[in-house]
Length: 357
Image (cartoon, rainbow, N blue to C red; front, side, top):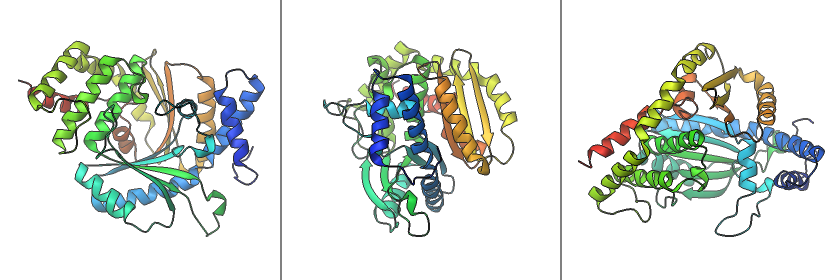
């Protein structure tokens, strides 16, 4: 199956999504549906490049130290989202409606810069693409503590790329502190086999991250998460109790130390003019594998991505993701959860804990 959008109908894409949600289907049906999903995801790569470069250029104008990366959503994340209900309702999303199959992210120094970029460039700007949604999770953070700024666009072109028109890309803008929180959640999810990110985590870890998000919000002079103590001292003491109970710093430091040797080996292989990186994290073997690809090898990268996902399907001890970044340094800073580097999060956590004394 080619990567061209011509010949693709949304009804076929949605049928494939429904098959992948259904456990009572044949292997042949699953394989066919997976092929359609892989192709549907792959055709988002061109509009994703456009939005990522736009975001990079814009964010550098507001913050020269900003980081910008892109990613295509993992298959298991797509299927989990299709199966998810919202506000007590039964799952109803179709695959063709999913807005974040393709996503790019800017990480800027502070929340003031994040909001300036979000409002002045994206909300008040004149991008020719159609904006179809926006979420301000800084002014109104999620109940679990997630804070970020999101904008959804439909790609629009009249210059020979019309076949991509209507494909959606999610643009995320985060402060560094918000990003440290989010990647720490993903690290804990992976190593403790939870799903805090999807509101399916253990209550103790969930409460810890909700509390620390409010502490970070105080630093950034942003609204607190609902139902967290308004008294700062009480908040800090609750965080201290949770940290002691869960041994957060000890456990995160241990994960980082266990992976250090493997990461050094990985770095040696990551030199050169690479644009795409396929990350494979083996939790039981304590091993991170990274394969790099040049810009012209994108098709090979996406095929390898799909093959690895298929090989490790259903395993909770493996995680695979394909990301694009300008430099390996940017890659490590933007995805510390895959390199198991929680040192910056731990540093910020210690600052909060000192306030409890």
